[in-house]
Amino acid sequence: MEVLMPALTITAKGQVTFRKEILQHLGLKPGEKIQLNLIPGGKGIIQAVKPTGGMSDFIGCLANKTKKVLTIEEINKATQKAWAKE
Image (cartoon, rainbow, N blue to C red; front, top):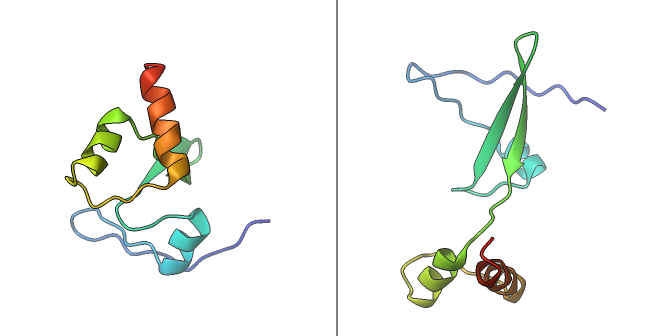
């Protein structure tokens, strides 16, 4: 089901600010990324980019060089990927 949202305004710098409802729908928080897939007819599909996390992210958390806080599941996933060299 398609939901029509209010139009967004493009700034002189070509930037757009997404409304809170859109970010919540996409499951996004400040600092996270989106991906725009262009399709024919001047249309695009926007979707959240899921963070992958690597060993350097994990080490950065341990060294207190980042503000990101990891869950046990994220730590386990990052270490498994790093040891598997993914």
